[in-house]
Image 1 (cartoon, rainbow, N blue to C red):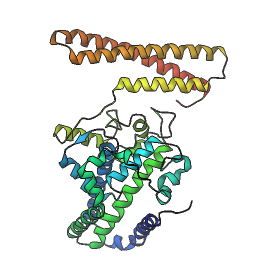
Image 2: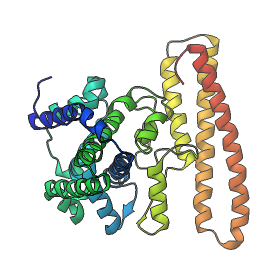
Image 3: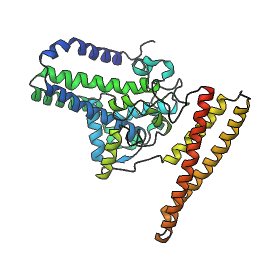
Image 4: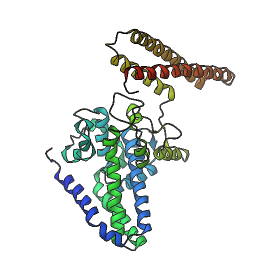
Length: 367
């Protein structure tokens, strides 16, 4: 790989070297206050990327009032990950061209390329049409125009505050700047590398993106990356009650406080419909050359079940739409019908899971 961005390369190498060279000196002034400074700034900076840059700006999964936006735009200076405009621009390219040559951090170019090397190789060809909505946002444009001042102002304030709290300029610089920035960077980069390599493909098996629960903890919920690539418009990445997704919880809480609204959610039936369609296509492609009796029976069963599921799902969703417009007298009956349809749909879904798992075991492919 030929380095194109020498300024980025120099910056990244320099702060990693500083982390190593200053470690012995930092140990001599270590304090738990410095650790607390690191944790607070790491959480603020990391959450500004996940809650703000990613879900608010890049994917428009919800809308926010100016106060909430300024909280995001100011605290994002702790992450050192470009302006919201440029970050969202590059991320939208990633989703539009994932796993292709046009993907800025394509995993197809290798783990380390997707993780960090792309930063030194990537030349942004800024396409205004990709971020036309963001260019109409005066707060986003102000941050982009004066991003350097945002970085200096916020980080200098944090450094001075950390110095006052820890009593050591070195401790404040090391934990409240160097380590915090490195941690946020590598956790973000691991979404591009690790979360396209190691994990489960629950929702979109044709993509490289995977769900990785460990990375979800380190990145405030971003580790459920397969779901995110399958349903990028959802404000949630972790959709189960047990999924660790503090970014989702923060957005939900902010909605209750009136700071954000319009939270976009992909309902469970839509998710299941997508899985049925993708499962069917994947299995039929896998067994296309199989001509034994089981394969022929399986093909017929898949077609039958998928059609039944599609029909039941369509009926259920129509009834749910009808419920929203129903009068008080009609609601009780519709709710009973919807309950019955949900039970029937679940039976078909359970049968689908059983059939596809059996097929996976029989023909030895991942499911």
